[in-house]
Image (cartoon, rainbow, N blue to C red; front, side, top):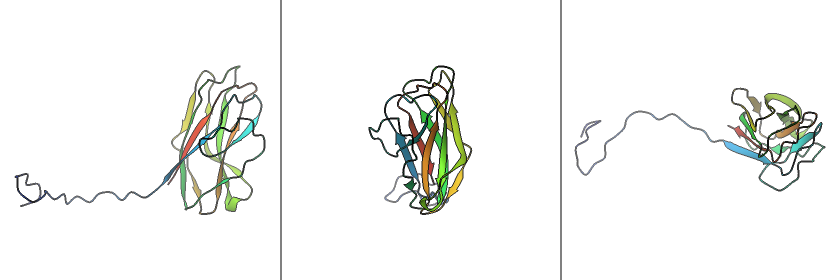
Length: 153
């Protein structure tokens, strides 16, 4: 049997084209429930849990278990921000689980919309670093039930 021979037999057609190497990664969800107050800064917890959207102090960063790249920020609300201002979501990087600083991975949910995304910006993280999602709300946002995901690869 030759490559590409599709005749019926007891052997299989062999594909000699090398497949691209795909390395592991992780999709990390963040979630909170309730309305997000205006003029607040919120630090979101990882996972789908029932924590209210009123955390005004930096949460413990989620530790990264492998070196890689944080990318593909996606944000969705169940209710749109109102009153003339949207919410800005920023990925914070916390080297060695220490002080956190903003990265270029961010997006703003505009008024009268429920979503935003940043599919282009990336930030490198090392094993042992931490990440946090910061939600800086507008003057009177009142968006509800934000759901955020990022990819680490």
